[in-house]
Length: 335
Picture 1 (cartoon, rainbow, N blue to C red):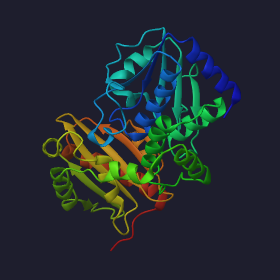
Picture 2 (picture 1 turned 45 degrees about the vertical axis):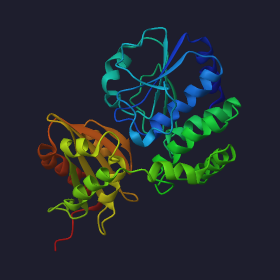
Picture 3 (picture 1 turned 135 degrees about the vertical axis):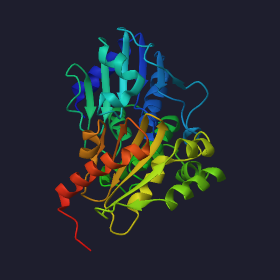
Picture 4 (picture 1 turned 180 degrees about the vertical axis):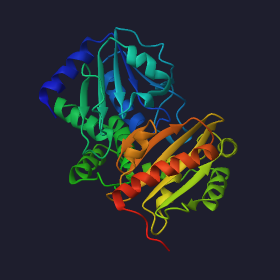
């Protein structure tokens, strides 16, 4: 961690008259947890801090925040006096309704990320470590650099973010440092059994039934069996209920098939929007596919959107994914 950048961050938050924390659309545990930990630290120092999301937090993360800590915004809350802090966003398009306001923002801005952030505005103060397992790991490194005492209120959202974005320490960016930080968070008061129970043991029955339907129709690509895909309709999401279905976990099953190295879940948001979630194994990368489709992410987990239904997305999305997989692994063997 660059000590000059840490010092500059301290100056910015001390001078700010308004601080707003933002993350990407479909807010996940890493972006939300990282923002929440920073927000709590700043509030504890008497700073004017707010966490704004593009949509209400999911049921799966309901245990993580207290009433009023997370708000839904649209970008109108930002002005030149606002210090904007963005988490886990490598592509401005992933900011959703905040994109226009952030792009036009002429005030101070900070980025915490663990993706390729080469396209970030040069005027931003950036804390980016592509080798980190999660954005929360980068936030923890700053806290350590500033000498912040990470107590349980900060440690819980950081730990939830860390285990979510490392797949419970199963993804390629998990390093000895990742585990070392996890150990510090446990020492600060995190109960890992309780956290995993809250994250994994509270699925509603209808959500599991819908998951079964999706998995029952999952397929391997007819042209390249190393690729698997699944589709989730808006009606299925509605049946499962708000937060009743963890699509970010559901996509992991696409690469649980023997011989499959990359998968995609196409989730219908509306008639003209499908959310794409990509996963891959080992050294196989899906981030180039996501970027070509207007999204981003990292090697083994990435996301994008498609302007249409899952049925309309399937052909072009699989064609793009197929091309990128074959560029890495060569043509599939003919059966």
